[in-house]
Amino acid sequence: MATSLTYNFDELNDRFSTPAAKFKKEYLLELFDTDDLYPFWIADQDFKTSPDIISSLEERARNGIFGYECKSQDFKSIVKAWYSNQYDCKVKPEWMQFTPTIMSSMAMAVDLFTSPKDQVIIQPPVYKEFKNVLHKTDRNIVTNCLQLKGNRYEMNFSELDEISKPKDVTAIMVCNPHNPGGRFWTHSELQKLVDLALKNNLLVISDEIHADVVFSGKKFTSLLSFPEIQNQLVVCYSPAKIFNIASISDSLCIIPNKELRYEFDKLRNRYTMGRTNAFSQVAWTTGFTKGSKWIKELNLYLETNVNYINQFIQDNLPEITCIAQDGTYLVWLDMSKLSIQGDELIKFLAKNAQVGLTNGRAFGVEGESFVRMNISCPLSIIQQSMASIKQALALLK
Image 1 (cartoon, rainbow, N blue to C red):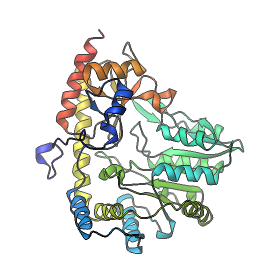
Image 2: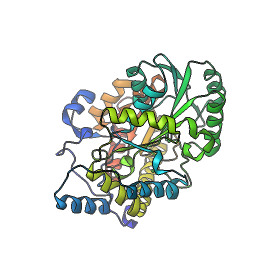
Image 3: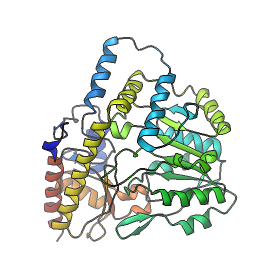
Image 4: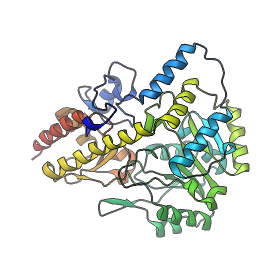
């Protein structure tokens, strides 16, 4: 696969010599009791971003002037076109709000549009910051746990309907696509969720940051595709995941409802949020207008990595199950048949296989006995690490 691509995703890049959080030795020692490993935990890529983005950033840097900038109408038109072409969604420029991060947007939405002690629904196992945001904003958590059916996660809609009925249940935080489960919720699944949200008057806050890493035959559906829910919908997005630009990227918050958007904008302005990062705007513009081929090849490469892991597990590690995924570069592994679990397993693999994986418990108790592996790195590293995991697990037998 790698030799047939235009872009070189096989290149080994030294991130240990950079300030990358994923490779910071102090973090590795704290998490894994060793820094002699390859880290597969934080969800960013070990590939360079698109060459077109690099060239555009270099050109912008040569300009040498980095004063205050604004988000132009041309830029918002480019974002609008991206949503139309990439997701078949109609988005109006006036719906757009910009914040530093996805979680900034989600926290602001929870703070503004629900009240302290309100109950907010999450669907674990799910990205840990959902729970953290609710704790920090003094909201109560209601869980609508995903169900693992035939090696694939599904929503429990009958339970969702029941737990949505009390008046103090006011919102649901949706991970679409799902992290860590790798599900791209289908149009019919999201339609059921939308219908229940309308029936029970729930605000829907959707994290759609993983939208662009899509595997063959799969499709991302944004909740913006459902006009009937737009009056009670907040969608949070950033191209940081697909273009690997998290350290320079803003976050986009799309709020169709004028009254909600007014309150959001007022809070954003109160804390002087959303000032434009010159490099962010350049990276977004270039990625959205010139990045389609790079995205296609990146996704093919990532899918090759996932397929390799699946086949390796099938051939060599029957005690591990790789949960079926539609996309994202986050592989979710069921380790429940092993004799050790949790932090003990994580540190065992760190010591004996030199791999740094994420303990599934970080995504809720529902993630107990799972680990998450970020596979956005060269295939050679995947191959070496899977062989090391096999050797390490042989020590448990």
